[in-house]
Image (cartoon, helix red, strand yellow):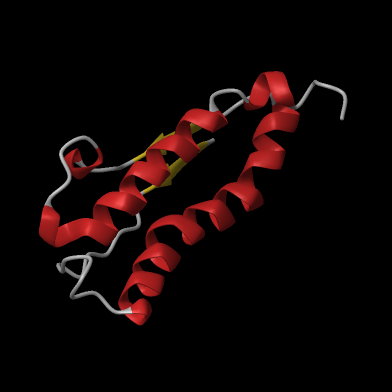
Length: 96
């Protein structure tokens, strides 16, 4: 099984010009949707000890663009989420 995280929207605004609503929508699509998909599919992948997670991010993770501040922040968060998933095989076997 392969899971591909490839959701993303960008508003194209600065921190000062952004609205709470546009920032919330960007985080909802770019981060929260990935969390939801992972929560749904990862338990079976861990139980079977099989599967791959592919995360599509952006160069703005490394080189943020001032007018894509919310997008860059979510894509950096997405990469952190992906890196944490690399430890799941170990964490799933650890006692609580």
